[in-house]
Image 1 (tube, rainbow, N blue to C red):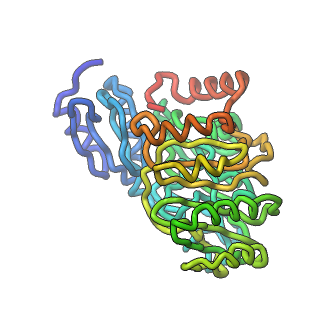
Image 2 (tube, rainbow, N blue to C red):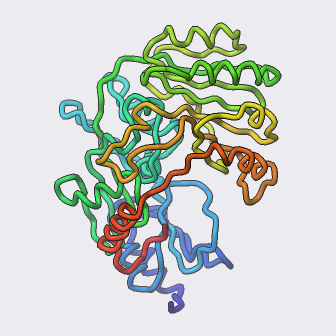
Length: 374
């Protein structure tokens, strides 16, 4: 890999409309581009290919690892949202958040499957198999994807759907995020009646009672109810339910905060959390969870999330619950202790050999020089 001169980056800076920051730190990226357009992304990927650099795409957030020889492309400025209300399709820039998408669709009585919080981006949940607050009813975020605009690692700007490139479209929905930089996604906008959504909060000293009641409540729920329980400074249950009656059992516990009300937008509040370990669990060991010394969250899975969808490269999520912690197991001994204690209940996401080989073929076709960093 040859060394780039500052002049080479000057040429890139003059060729893009976005802001280019030249870094060249000890283990940091050589440069960071805040892209203002799809053309900016294409120009930068072409520049990287010609100069022996690699490319890493992220909307926002901290990036770990050795990024020497890498140009980071930030898509946070690509925030345009366009709704075709007649065709029920919403086109969303890669930098937009699900809160902004929800606010655009709500006046029309529509929604799009998204992530689990309004401050979350939309590319990650599609490319990595995420789901939103109606996931148990409608499935993972990629299930209603109509098309994707991206610049592949070979430098081409492409609009991908089931007809133009079914293999790449399949891979983008849950299987691979290292074929290029997604600049926009198009989703089916669905009509949906308001659900009963919001938060029930309890003092932390009631955690044993509330956790056990919540686990019992989730057993046998229909697919129209999604919820998650957080243990931190308090016990918080965030939920959406199509049937108001199913909330009654939790309200009977006497929450100190109750914001559940009819809504079309996500009930989960805007916050940024330091996510760490993630585990799919068949069941929850209550004593182990209550003894944990780290903030954690349990999300109820199942329903459409557990039924295979052959259109997606990640067809389903295993397990009945997803546990997420603050702090990583390789850096926090308390997290490591919790992960080890729950290991026998874990149902990891495993792709079979045929799926992995198929994903590798897609990546080789879209990024033959392996410009993109996974």
